[in-house]
Length: 170
Image (tube, rainbow, N blue to C red):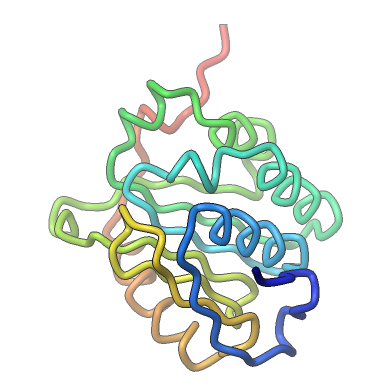
């Protein structure tokens, strides 16, 4: 079992092979706890077992409150399913809308089946098959993170807001 708190974002260049839901949860939480500037996530349904966990949500909130210039971008493919489930990240995005932006991927990217988290443009967790928990991760791999971000940026540029991703207040 990895001790993710021993890895430093932007400093520990070590390829990690994650193979379970728990590894993905812990690695994501550790990476976000250390992030200061940016967090980019691409996920079909914003995997609730990783991204809808109290520790993950608390880490994102703390990142924003501690670093008022940070940016969180979340790209999803099945916005209606996420909204129907009542994802905590949607609630947080409503509360901190100046820092968190959620978009629905364009139809031209519907075949993208990966899952991705990039923190501070240097640390990443990449699941080539987004519905599985086998992933590569590294807390300090700028080149690989940038290559993954290039794909993310292309999808982000074509993505749009979705009524399902907006918080409704009554």
